[in-house]
Image 1: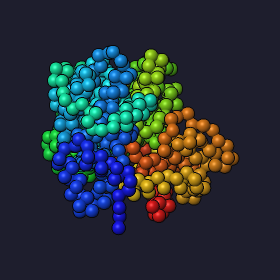
Image 2: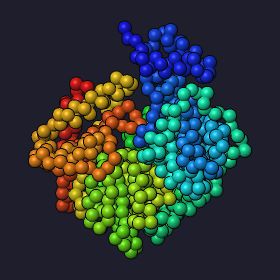
Image 3: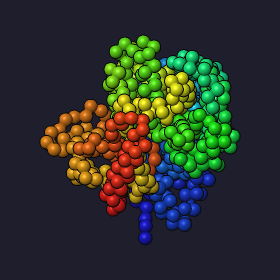
Length: 583
């Protein structure tokens, strides 16, 4: 018979005896009486902590759940840290929220706690995209910011992304220091929930207009937009915040023919037309693709609920709509931006781009060809923003990307930004058309110059405490007993970002990795393939990233070579799945 472990029992006892509401206490007591050990354990076995995307979890009662208490504790901890960091100063914060259930309630609660702690609050009047919150922090001169969102997670989730005064999500040492302040709070009674309404200011359209003006400033091909303003664009906000700004952004830079997927236009935290509100999922794009076929569109865009990620679909060589993955879209954006910077004589030799270590190496090759630095970071846009902060007024930032559909163009936002990305993707499509190419042909043109790279993501979900332990066991096994070969090709390098050691598996030579530590492993194979293993920082998943490559001589060779690489990824994936069966 299962029993509660000591930590879970202690957390439950604290809730039952503490200053929590009667409804929550009754829910816990009912679960105890029904001996729902698994449910109680998952809700109370740990406290939510900041991951790569802040705090994120299932909504409900418990220390491992998103509710008014976990949000209140996080806000009180952040408020305490701000006062400690900036004593005797008039501190202000900005707060935004997305379309998820309870987001407005939790945003107002966050505003109340800040205002109760003598911190001035700028609260958006309605839901807004996450990147606009990042922009607002810097525009208003705030010391920090918060957005209530769980990004692309299922409807049961919500979350809390915390930002610093540079508009970026918290990084070292601020994230650890905020956690320390949260952990110092001994009881929920130490959280001040009583608001000071005079310290809460509602913001809205003025910030929208300033943000849209920045997007227009960074466009590089206004003449191509003017000539191809009737590009037929289908857009879906997937029931999220993108509807507030994507259509306005496209109109502002000059596009006139944007069709909204009506079934997904209205913000709705239940996300009724999709299983997961994530443009990475093919199913989430179905209605967009149906509309695109119906009107014979040129380009399809879909953003996740907080509009920091965007997925796109284009026509292939046969005229059929296909979904591009995040690496392909990132490649198109980087190539377009770098090429246009060169054509407009904007390159001085002091420019750089940034991407994460699991994002395609094709981007590195493009940057190298143009003499541009490419910085690789750990997963999470906060690390890209950290590089921008470090290089402020020293080097010029062009763009940043991560393979999971996140892109940042220009530095007026310090997080991934689907609003700006949608605008520049459409501009890139207009530019390609001006060259007599479709978007897909433009991508093949890049492949011919730098090689055909193909990537695949294998994501394995392991829920609850047992799942977390299984993921930990997987990583420990790969770390202690790495495979000598994978799918018939020798492993020649092992990069362990947790120990910060890169090891040559043939010579035994080791050297340090100049990045912060992270629980990531990368295997470089003799045939040029790369496999990365990384537990997710925001979901109960472990992710395996596969990358293979080959030279593409002509456009006519594309289809056969693509199939060849697809089969190679398939065999490598099956090989890895076999290794993982025991977990």
